[in-house]
Length: 179
Image (tube, rainbow, N blue to C red; front, side, top):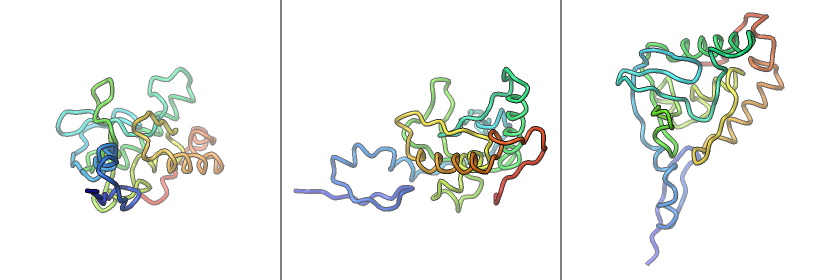
């Protein structure tokens, strides 16, 4: 007997045999949506939510607040500002890929500011930070579902000289595009 299962994930519907379903944990996890309220923005890619847990944004890395150079600290402050503007004090919707937590105990999630957006990685806060140039792509297997889309967004930010690839800390403009 052959069992075929249809699974809905970010990439759309997929037909899989039973053996593939057991290996497709990342697709299944993406169908679960968690709701939180952001209590505090730590930096551009990490927030504290109402449960007291820290959430690390999946697939991206923003400059460090306590960076070594003035430029890095400036860009980190910009990334934090953008994150505060998008999710600070607000309800967020979160989805995981494969892993639940990182080695520091932080939840690993894609973050969305609207419930209606959770089916599109391009509408995630993670993607918006990359597209605005305030985050670099950071893909750590097995959490790789967004890698291709995020690399395309980063390449576009580089071409347009946004954020990390521009003169933002001297120019003073923050371009979020449509949020």
